[in-house]
Image 1: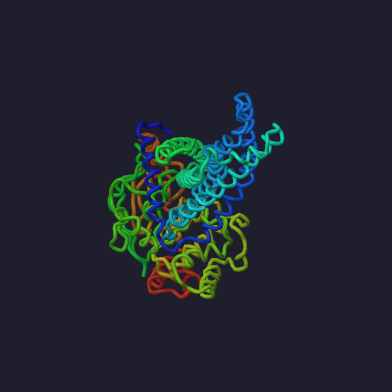
Image 2 (image 1 turned 90 degrees about the horizontal axis):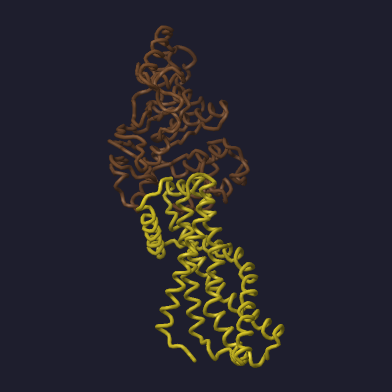
Length: 256
Length: 309
């Protein structure tokens, strides 16, 4: 394949065009409820366990780092506060992003890509059915819902992991850890994280669907598409995360 | 009655590579046409352009008075309901069994009750000889069965136009013969416009009313079967006879001197081929007037065996 200077621009344009198509197809009836439930179940089943397993060490690492730092500063009573803040604000959206793109997005991309190269998507279009409405919209919605739920899961598991490492392994005081929970973090942090997760879910599913639906060149093409979809999604998610965090700090007044 | 497809000045290229240019032809309503061409001449691309899956650079494709190439996405989906397409490998949905695959268009587009859907699906499955395989997944059956299931799915919405993408590729000669008979029977039964894209010469000689040949990025010829079978055009003769001597080479094309030398050799041999008899609808099929006329003409040409009617 030849590289052309406008290629990257054209792909970005097509990706955004598809995102707009998805938004336009959202209110279209009949809503594909069956497909939505199947996909939500599917994405959840491939992401829940890895997410839980990733968030335990994530919470632990944060607890270890903060634990030793606060001990040196003589601020052990704040270790709970700092740990919760870190998990809630940054760790949980990032872990959600990694898992929803790495496990959910790849599965969606591989599924659609395999259908594309077997001519199933073309067959569907010829049968007069819009694959965006029939396949992509339910997947995007499913991925968004599951991302929001995953974010909750990561927060709980991460905080629990932090508590375990701080209190049991580093001999922190349980009361101080729990009491300082809300000194720095606030409820709006959780809302912000959930909104981030919602957006991440949408981006991951749209990129994965776009890459899957434009896969070509046989089974290798599907592999390439999955690979590219993960890389593109990660880049987009981290940039989006930065922007949303920056906006959040401007909009919502912080404690402390 | 089927619908006429009128193609004018169609040109398609991927990047700088021209696939074919300035293709103009009319697929007459209700007739069977075959598009031939060596591998890699963009036959499948032509088929996908006809249903609007690919956009051509220039030219128009008029179906029932509407230009496919200029329709908006929404209208395009409406026009496509006129089409039934059989893809190369059947393009069945891998996650559904055969019954659900064939019922899919009915469930998506009509408000028919499940019992009515069942009646239609079983009727079409019977037509292609798949009764008993309803519960099988596409991955569990042979390529021939997948093609027939794909055909059944293309038929459930009673299309006016049916496009076949290499119906005979990957099938054994006996199954190809059955499939050709099925295509002819179908044409007699449902009166739709058929376009078959293939490189199987035997089918091309027996089945169609019209033959077209794509070669060297253009439509070499399109016309009635008899005309092409009797044609003196070197490319047409070489392809329809499956010979090595002629303008079509292994890689792409040969140089002019070699072609002339080879053609001279053939002319020395000079044996004219007897016209291939045409495949007619089977005995159990009621023939519409068009097929009655074809059967009479075949009987006059060949004299034997075709007197039942």
